[in-house]
Amino acid sequence: PSLSPRRLCLFNTVKGTALRDLNFLTSVLAVRVNKK
Image (spheres, helix red, strand yellow):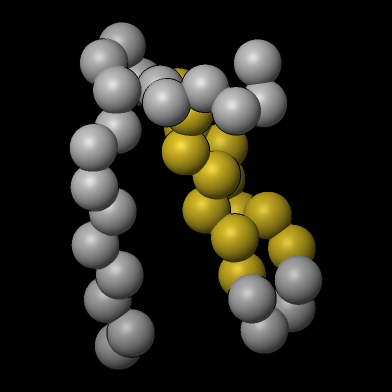
């Protein structure tokens, strides 16, 4: 499903494109952003 807690979509906000669509066995609890 598109709104699964096990799915993470990395998105480029500048270009407006999806970079990666990752699926995990367990729920994603937090996401840390590094702006380097």
